[in-house]
Image 1 (cartoon, rainbow, N blue to C red):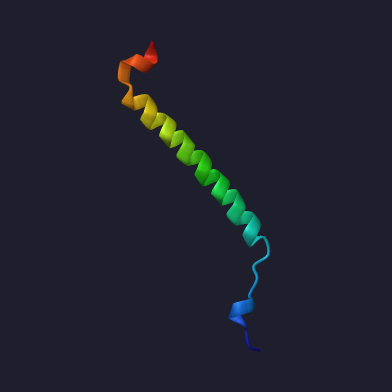
Image 2: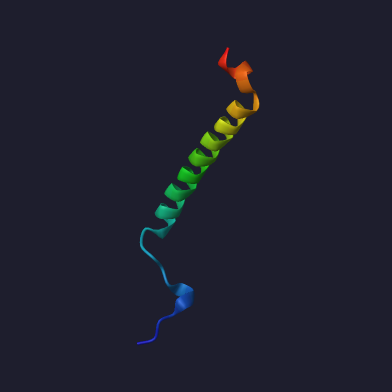
Length: 46
């Protein structure tokens, strides 16, 4: 049996990639909030 790698499909791969992209966006946003909070120092705590 020969496997055609050009037409190989993984079930659920697109869904998994979409979920992963959402997680990466959430993590990136949280990281940006932490950096912004650290940048303003004590002024943010008032």
